[in-house]
Length: 257
Image (cartoon, rainbow, N blue to C red; front, side, top):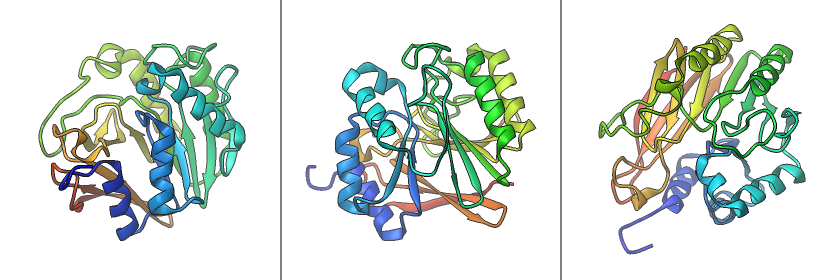
Protein backbone atom coordinates (compact mmCIF):
# COMPACT_ATOMS: atom_id res chain seq x y z
CA UNK A 1 0.00 0.00 0.00
CA UNK A 2 1.20 3.58 -0.60
CA UNK A 3 2.61 5.39 2.41
CA UNK A 4 -0.15 6.58 4.70
CA UNK A 5 -2.81 4.34 3.17
CA UNK A 6 -3.90 0.95 4.50
CA UNK A 7 -6.41 -1.58 3.28
CA UNK A 8 -7.64 -4.79 4.97
CA UNK A 9 -4.17 -5.22 6.42
CA UNK A 10 -4.76 -2.15 8.60
CA UNK A 11 -7.90 -3.70 10.08
CA UNK A 12 -6.08 -6.95 10.83
CA UNK A 13 -3.20 -5.10 12.47
CA UNK A 14 -5.66 -3.14 14.64
CA UNK A 15 -7.37 -6.40 15.62
CA UNK A 16 -4.00 -7.86 16.51
CA UNK A 17 -3.37 -4.88 18.79
CA UNK A 18 -6.74 -4.74 20.58
CA UNK A 19 -7.39 -8.49 20.64
CA UNK A 20 -8.80 -10.44 17.73
CA UNK A 21 -11.32 -12.50 19.68
CA UNK A 22 -12.01 -16.18 19.07
CA UNK A 23 -12.85 -15.93 15.38
CA UNK A 24 -13.87 -13.61 12.54
CA UNK A 25 -17.00 -13.69 10.38
CA UNK A 26 -16.90 -11.77 7.09
CA UNK A 27 -20.45 -11.18 5.80
CA UNK A 28 -19.68 -11.25 2.09
CA UNK A 29 -17.75 -9.16 -0.46
CA UNK A 30 -14.43 -10.69 0.53
CA UNK A 31 -13.09 -10.93 -2.99
CA UNK A 32 -10.55 -12.31 -3.50
CA UNK A 33 -10.76 -14.69 -0.50
CA UNK A 34 -7.28 -16.20 -0.94
CA UNK A 35 -5.36 -12.96 -0.29
CA UNK A 36 -7.83 -12.05 2.49
CA UNK A 37 -7.02 -15.34 4.24
CA UNK A 38 -3.30 -14.73 3.67
CA UNK A 39 -3.59 -11.32 5.36
CA UNK A 40 -5.41 -12.90 8.31
CA UNK A 41 -2.63 -15.51 8.51
CA UNK A 42 0.02 -12.81 8.57
CA UNK A 43 -1.48 -10.75 11.39
CA UNK A 44 -3.71 -13.13 13.36
CA UNK A 45 -2.11 -16.52 12.71
CA UNK A 46 -2.66 -19.48 10.42
CA UNK A 47 -4.85 -21.19 13.03
CA UNK A 48 -7.15 -18.20 13.55
CA UNK A 49 -10.74 -19.21 12.78
CA UNK A 50 -12.43 -17.37 9.92
CA UNK A 51 -15.97 -17.86 8.63
CA UNK A 52 -16.54 -16.41 5.13
CA UNK A 53 -20.08 -15.67 3.92
CA UNK A 54 -21.25 -15.44 0.30
CA UNK A 55 -21.90 -11.93 -1.01
CA UNK A 56 -22.76 -10.64 -4.45
CA UNK A 57 -19.08 -10.00 -5.22
CA UNK A 58 -18.37 -13.72 -4.74
CA UNK A 59 -20.95 -14.50 -7.44
CA UNK A 60 -19.23 -12.27 -9.97
CA UNK A 61 -16.09 -14.42 -10.13
CA UNK A 62 -16.37 -18.20 -10.24
CA UNK A 63 -12.93 -18.58 -8.68
CA UNK A 64 -14.08 -16.76 -5.53
CA UNK A 65 -17.12 -19.00 -5.03
CA UNK A 66 -14.99 -22.07 -5.77
CA UNK A 67 -12.57 -20.99 -3.04
CA UNK A 68 -15.41 -20.70 -0.51
CA UNK A 69 -16.77 -24.11 -1.49
CA UNK A 70 -13.35 -25.70 -1.06
CA UNK A 71 -13.07 -24.07 2.37
CA UNK A 72 -16.43 -25.54 3.39
CA UNK A 73 -15.61 -28.99 2.02
CA UNK A 74 -12.36 -29.04 3.96
CA UNK A 75 -14.35 -28.75 7.19
CA UNK A 76 -16.26 -25.94 8.86
CA UNK A 77 -15.00 -25.42 12.44
CA UNK A 78 -17.55 -26.26 15.17
CA UNK A 79 -20.09 -27.23 12.48
CA UNK A 80 -23.59 -28.13 13.67
CA UNK A 81 -25.50 -28.46 10.41
CA UNK A 82 -24.99 -28.01 6.70
CA UNK A 83 -27.50 -26.20 4.52
CA UNK A 84 -30.41 -27.44 2.43
CA UNK A 85 -29.93 -29.28 -0.91
CA UNK A 86 -27.96 -27.12 -3.33
CA UNK A 87 -26.49 -24.96 -0.57
CA UNK A 88 -24.66 -27.49 1.61
CA UNK A 89 -21.42 -25.49 1.31
CA UNK A 90 -22.75 -21.92 1.59
CA UNK A 91 -25.44 -22.23 4.28
CA UNK A 92 -24.47 -23.72 7.63
CA UNK A 93 -24.66 -23.34 11.38
CA UNK A 94 -22.00 -23.66 14.06
CA UNK A 95 -21.77 -23.41 17.84
CA UNK A 96 -19.22 -21.60 19.95
CA UNK A 97 -19.45 -21.51 23.76
CA UNK A 98 -23.04 -20.52 24.63
CA UNK A 99 -23.80 -19.15 21.15
CA UNK A 100 -25.38 -20.64 18.04
CA UNK A 101 -24.48 -19.01 14.71
CA UNK A 102 -26.31 -19.40 11.41
CA UNK A 103 -24.73 -18.35 8.11
CA UNK A 104 -27.19 -17.82 5.25
CA UNK A 105 -26.67 -17.37 1.52
CA UNK A 106 -28.91 -14.68 0.01
CA UNK A 107 -28.22 -16.03 -3.47
CA UNK A 108 -29.89 -19.42 -3.06
CA UNK A 109 -33.22 -20.09 -4.76
CA UNK A 110 -34.03 -23.53 -3.39
CA UNK A 111 -31.93 -25.29 -6.05
CA UNK A 112 -28.76 -23.35 -6.84
CA UNK A 113 -26.65 -21.38 -4.35
CA UNK A 114 -25.43 -18.82 -6.87
CA UNK A 115 -28.42 -17.01 -8.37
CA UNK A 116 -29.19 -13.29 -8.20
CA UNK A 117 -32.16 -13.46 -5.86
CA UNK A 118 -31.87 -11.24 -2.80
CA UNK A 119 -34.42 -12.80 -0.50
CA UNK A 120 -34.87 -15.81 1.75
CA UNK A 121 -36.55 -18.53 -0.37
CA UNK A 122 -38.88 -21.06 1.21
CA UNK A 123 -36.24 -23.80 1.27
CA UNK A 124 -33.78 -21.61 3.20
CA UNK A 125 -36.52 -20.21 5.42
CA UNK A 126 -37.71 -23.68 6.45
CA UNK A 127 -34.12 -24.87 7.00
CA UNK A 128 -33.45 -21.82 9.20
CA UNK A 129 -36.64 -22.41 11.18
CA UNK A 130 -35.69 -26.05 11.84
CA UNK A 131 -32.12 -25.11 12.70
CA UNK A 132 -33.10 -22.43 15.22
CA UNK A 133 -35.72 -24.71 16.75
CA UNK A 134 -33.10 -27.40 17.32
CA UNK A 135 -30.55 -25.35 19.27
CA UNK A 136 -30.52 -25.07 23.05
CA UNK A 137 -27.90 -22.31 23.08
CA UNK A 138 -29.14 -19.18 24.88
CA UNK A 139 -27.56 -16.78 22.38
CA UNK A 140 -28.46 -17.02 18.68
CA UNK A 141 -26.87 -15.04 15.87
CA UNK A 142 -27.80 -14.98 12.17
CA UNK A 143 -25.40 -13.74 9.50
CA UNK A 144 -26.01 -13.02 5.81
CA UNK A 145 -24.88 -10.51 3.22
CA UNK A 146 -27.83 -8.20 2.60
CA UNK A 147 -29.49 -6.11 5.30
CA UNK A 148 -33.12 -6.27 6.32
CA UNK A 149 -33.08 -2.58 5.51
CA UNK A 150 -30.29 -0.38 4.18
CA UNK A 151 -29.48 2.36 6.69
CA UNK A 152 -27.19 5.40 6.39
CA UNK A 153 -23.63 5.16 7.62
CA UNK A 154 -23.51 6.25 11.27
CA UNK A 155 -20.78 8.82 10.61
CA UNK A 156 -20.96 9.97 6.98
CA UNK A 157 -24.67 9.43 6.33
CA UNK A 158 -23.96 7.68 3.03
CA UNK A 159 -26.82 5.42 1.95
CA UNK A 160 -26.28 2.61 -0.57
CA UNK A 161 -28.56 -0.16 -1.87
CA UNK A 162 -31.61 1.59 -0.42
CA UNK A 163 -33.90 -0.02 -3.00
CA UNK A 164 -32.57 -3.55 -2.57
CA UNK A 165 -33.81 -6.44 -0.43
CA UNK A 166 -35.52 -4.51 2.38
CA UNK A 167 -37.57 -1.85 0.65
CA UNK A 168 -38.67 -3.84 -2.38
CA UNK A 169 -39.63 -7.10 -0.67
CA UNK A 170 -41.36 -5.99 2.48
CA UNK A 171 -43.38 -9.18 2.89
CA UNK A 172 -40.21 -11.31 2.75
CA UNK A 173 -38.44 -9.04 5.23
CA UNK A 174 -41.37 -9.05 7.65
CA UNK A 175 -41.59 -12.86 7.52
CA UNK A 176 -37.85 -13.19 8.07
CA UNK A 177 -37.82 -10.68 10.93
CA UNK A 178 -40.73 -12.45 12.62
CA UNK A 179 -38.79 -15.72 12.51
CA UNK A 180 -35.73 -14.06 14.07
CA UNK A 181 -37.92 -12.65 16.84
CA UNK A 182 -39.74 -15.94 17.37
CA UNK A 183 -36.46 -17.70 18.14
CA UNK A 184 -34.99 -14.77 20.09
CA UNK A 185 -32.09 -14.16 17.69
CA UNK A 186 -29.94 -11.58 19.43
CA UNK A 187 -28.63 -9.83 16.33
CA UNK A 188 -28.72 -10.07 12.55
CA UNK A 189 -25.24 -9.36 11.14
CA UNK A 190 -24.89 -8.22 7.53
CA UNK A 191 -22.78 -6.26 5.05
CA UNK A 192 -23.44 -5.31 1.42
CA UNK A 193 -23.92 -1.55 1.91
CA UNK A 194 -20.26 -0.89 2.86
CA UNK A 195 -21.74 1.52 5.43
CA UNK A 196 -21.88 0.79 9.16
CA UNK A 197 -24.90 1.03 11.45
CA UNK A 198 -26.20 -0.81 14.52
CA UNK A 199 -29.93 -0.23 14.83
CA UNK A 200 -33.19 -2.04 15.46
CA UNK A 201 -35.01 -2.96 12.24
CA UNK A 202 -38.45 -4.60 12.41
CA UNK A 203 -37.80 -5.17 16.12
CA UNK A 204 -34.51 -7.01 15.47
CA UNK A 205 -30.99 -5.72 16.15
CA UNK A 206 -29.24 -5.30 12.81
CA UNK A 207 -25.47 -4.85 12.80
CA UNK A 208 -24.25 -3.73 9.38
CA UNK A 209 -20.52 -4.30 9.45
CA UNK A 210 -19.64 -1.67 6.85
CA UNK A 211 -16.38 -2.29 4.99
CA UNK A 212 -12.84 -3.15 6.09
CA UNK A 213 -11.13 -1.95 2.91
CA UNK A 214 -9.26 0.84 4.65
CA UNK A 215 -8.49 3.63 2.21
CA UNK A 216 -10.07 1.61 -0.60
CA UNK A 217 -13.49 3.17 0.07
CA UNK A 218 -13.47 6.74 1.30
CA UNK A 219 -17.26 7.06 1.36
CA UNK A 220 -17.34 5.75 4.92
CA UNK A 221 -14.63 4.88 7.44
CA UNK A 222 -13.15 1.39 7.40
CA UNK A 223 -14.78 -0.61 10.20
CA UNK A 224 -14.79 -3.81 12.18
CA UNK A 225 -17.28 -4.92 14.81
CA UNK A 226 -16.13 -6.72 17.93
CA UNK A 227 -18.88 -8.61 19.72
CA UNK A 228 -18.44 -9.29 23.41
CA UNK A 229 -20.43 -11.86 25.38
CA UNK A 230 -20.69 -12.14 29.17
CA UNK A 231 -23.12 -14.86 30.18
CA UNK A 232 -26.25 -14.07 28.19
CA UNK A 233 -25.39 -10.38 27.84
CA UNK A 234 -23.97 -9.22 24.53
CA UNK A 235 -22.68 -5.95 23.18
CA UNK A 236 -20.83 -4.78 20.11
CA UNK A 237 -17.89 -2.39 19.94
CA UNK A 238 -17.69 -0.45 16.67
CA UNK A 239 -14.11 0.37 15.65
CA UNK A 240 -13.51 2.83 12.82
CA UNK A 241 -10.40 4.11 11.06
CA UNK A 242 -9.54 7.45 9.51
CA UNK A 243 -10.19 7.78 5.78
CA UNK A 244 -6.71 6.44 4.97
CA UNK A 245 -7.55 3.19 6.75
CA UNK A 246 -5.29 3.92 9.73
CA UNK A 247 -5.69 4.62 13.46
CA UNK A 248 -8.71 2.49 14.32
CA UNK A 249 -10.50 3.77 17.41
CA UNK A 250 -13.56 2.70 19.37
CA UNK A 251 -16.43 4.74 17.95
CA UNK A 252 -19.30 3.43 20.10
CA UNK A 253 -20.52 0.44 22.10
CA UNK A 254 -24.09 -0.83 21.70
CA UNK A 255 -25.74 -3.12 24.25
CA UNK A 256 -27.65 -5.79 22.35
CA UNK A 257 -30.46 -6.31 24.83
